[in-house]
Image (cartoon, rainbow, N blue to C red; front, side):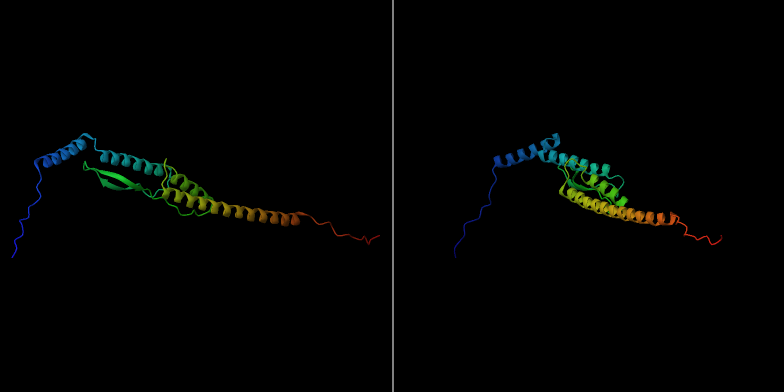
Length: 174
């Protein structure tokens, strides 16, 4: 039977432990003094996200369905920071082409309101542009139909308004 040499656990030297404590202490001091770069990045992201969603709300013209909702990340200081958000906006067409046209313009304005619209914002703006085009087309068709009916109606009315000449009469009394 052979004997295996005893397994020794890796040891940590005093200088390694001191260095680890120093790094942890430096990180704690950086966090406490506000010099933590990750925390600063989270704080900046929070400001950007909140301003972005506020721009949507301000431009929604009453189409927002409630306030902004956010997704959060916990910072090293124990606080929650917004890292994403959304504002739900009513994108359904209006009851009339005129209403749809006005609504589509408002939706597009709200979608493109932030200084740096996201890809989702641009997609919503594109959908609103399609809605706007459809409403404009429908409105133009209604106006064309209305004007042609009006012209036909005018011609018919003119026909009724014209007094026919009295039929020729022969005077038989002499």
